[in-house]
Image (tube, rainbow, N blue to C red; front, side, top):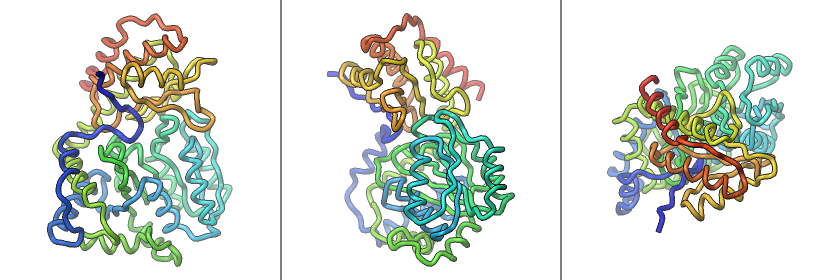
Length: 383
């Protein structure tokens, strides 16, 4: 009889107007009606990415855009640096090695952000590096990397910055042109408030010129084909029509609300959850440089996070995420990105405290929901 609430770091809840748009009758992806939709979508994506360059649309998950970035920007045998600070940093390494690239791994402790001086040292040591692959927001740990500084360093070194913004775009500032990012990508199922199935990638002029030098880019994820197609308000292959009509509604929301207000809300929700978690008596994984839209919560030694997650779902109707890799069973990840508000999170904090105690934890917290909500409204006013 309870309503299920999904607060995972993707997929995320969908606004009603997006859901209704997804239910519209099918239209043909090569006709003028659809081209008008794609033209409007393109303007919205450029606003969201903060770029004057085209934003290419792929029918895939965000990982497809990661593969496309690597295969289109680098040739086998070239050297790249991968910032490995979590599960998705490791994914960059796997994709790069599959491409036949030489990978220099800059390993960062899970829960920490990369230090610019250490990245600079690596770039000084390995002179043949062609690019840096990094997450804006490392979804497995809730860490926000200093992307503006990374992109600036890459610009000075004359190499490409390739940024996975899957858990950042539409959640926290990541303006591509202003920060000098060469390649920024994201997926549909997080900040964009859509089902999984679409990926988006944009290239700076410098990056596009590099793509033109790559002889084997792959067939489906050929970004030169996609670039030529999007200039004609098309995609190179069959479009995900209904997802794109949903995207049109989602992007309208971003433009009507304004990115500044979206970011204010996401920052306030993040501070609310972090404050509530601390008041419950739990520890945060990322103590600084934390991402917006996702909070990673450590469980005490001896208490398996999966037990708490099970109670949260079965008794209180809250679906949250666990840890990955070495953090499996050790953390709970609370997603508060996309179509989520403070009421959803107030209930989540209540359910988290109760589930933690019922799973064997100890918490005598009082008034933590009210105090967390105070932080939410205070942050809104101050941001």
